[in-house]
Amino acid sequence: MKVTVEHVFEAGVVGAGGAGFPTHVKLSARADTVLINAAECEPLLHKDKEILRDYTETVLEGLQIAMQLVGAERGVIGIKGKYHDVIEKLERLIPPRVEIVPLPDAYPSGDEFILVYEALGRVIPPGGIPLHVGAVVINVETAFNVAQAASQPVVEKYLTIAGAVREPVTLRVPVGVTLAECLELAGGATVANPQLMVGGVMMGYLEENPQALVDKTTGGVIVLPHDHIVIRRRRQDWKQIARIGRSACDQCSFCTELCPRWLLGHPIEPHRAMRSLGFTLVGEANVQGTAFCCECNLCSLYSCPEDLDPKNVCAQNKRRILAEKRRWENPPFVPERADRLLKNRRAPTARLMRKLGLTVYPNVGPLVERTVTPRRVGIKLKQHVGVPCEPIVQVGDRVERGQMIGRPPRANGKPALGAPVHASIAGRVSAITDGIIWIESE
Image (tube, rainbow, N blue to C red; front, side, top):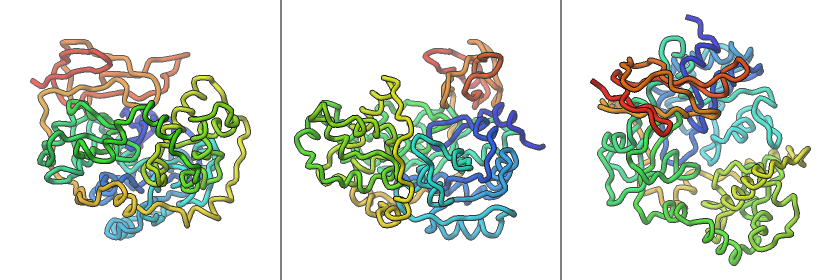
């Protein structure tokens, strides 16, 4: 069956590796290139590479569907060059008009802006999106889900469980199971009082509750000891960050010199933003430029020799700018900076892992046929960018696996930005509370 944009919407496909932008919106655009993001630059995460190895043909089918929907003449797969076995398999199966671009083993090669430059040689302008330079970017798992959209909605999630666990693995589990259930499939933690970094150690978040639910955007969980440097840094509050930064920043500018967005020519200079901690009159541009921070954390966890936190300073300024509804019209842009500097200022993944104390953990995550058979799942009504879905079932209703149970509301006759959600198991709706539909198996 030919997959349409409507199929992609009805299947609830969203970006599986980040914020969860509804994929049907991306595939309603027109572009000359569709780029598969297989860079997966977060340390210890492997799920995209594993999907691409085990389901190569399905991912390639999803790429071709996306190309057809956006009218693209070219498909590109950006993958780290070190994955020779995956690249060799791709080369045997690659369809016409699709090419493979080997990427350096560096962080953050999976950032959309960096990826578009590394794979296509195009620089996205400040505040822009890949479409502004003729590209649509989708994740490996997203392409996998697009290929199945006409026959199966998104009711399963692939994720890597790694770090301080007995067996680092990549799993396929029903959407709505708990992180604790996934951790058990990796043999459990090897440390007391394990801490869970959901989404990765760089751009992920510290999840205090092991009963938190897996949703469509959960890409992985890194388990770490409670006293690990990454955990200690995450637990710093804003008062500590500001006080230490105000007293210790010596304006060395390493944070700026290695900032991926500054290297692309964007007007962000984290070292200047640090001045806002100690002075109120630091220049409007120094604060406004933080609107273009991608929050990759490279400045805070890699570049700064004082272990300060420029990322959170930029993020605080960025939120204030958004709250004040300020926008920098026609920001300065130096795209040629990327050609001059980016290649020589990448952050090698191996060096980043040493800096963060992650080399003690096996850097593997094989995809295993091992899953949860849950008695209960919780399906979030908001697993995407946009507005929460409205439940279309009631407590007591019997639902089947794959049945739509929540749908974006309509505004002006059209669905609001969002994506439907579906039951990941068969059972009965036991509760609808706090934005979650709970289903108990029978």
